[in-house]
Length: 334
Image (cartoon, rainbow, N blue to C red):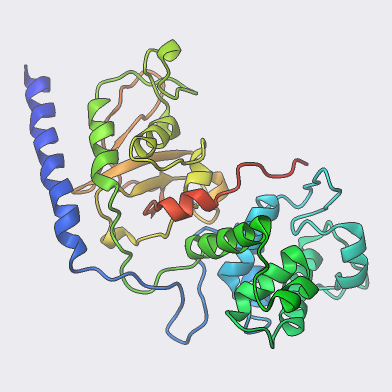
């Protein structure tokens, strides 16, 4: 009876917080990623620490790119895997095909060679190639960065010939995806706009309180409706029409990243033993306010309320439909 009463009180608490989400919306304004001097700053941990300095430095090579955009391209191409190989024989962290590398690879680290497998060469080469393409299409009407991305996908001649982004579905999608992912990799300036789907996602998770944890669980009938941590968050947002990736470290890139003191109910909150690298995230929950989340914690436990203020707290994501739709569904294997 005591446990049941406690859950009832908590559910009422969650309901008030969800209402508060929409009340707070009137006073919040979204901000673009960046810093006070105009240089785009990277979101905490979004780029693995091993590559963060390279991305920050080379992402400022020319006005058409910025560190978050370069990060979005690298994540889309390889998921930060320096040994990635695609079916088209694109290689390395930046996925250069041999012919393009031969003509555009640079010796980024100054060691006397151009190694497509070495991120210290490949990341500078990706930035250099972007800037080269931007130069080719600089007189084309429209957004210079959009035109550069279109040239990366379809070739500079196609962009020049069509006077902007060509009417190719693949190219239009490529530009949209990278510009959406860019928002996920940039540190926000100002407050992040509240999520309109937050209430529905929390409502779904509430209904699962007390359900036993299942490693690999996605809530299917065969699994008796049981979940693991990312299975629960995926299902909660699927219930409001947003398709998240299956694993927690990819879910981190499904939208912008509010700071700890800007959290709102519905935000995904993440935990890791390495606070410098989102690829090491191992746990996720749905924030409900007051320093608590609903999560599926571990084998032997049930879906429940847990505090988020622990030493392994990594950060948060405010899920957007646009951000989730931009995430790659397949990355090249090693």
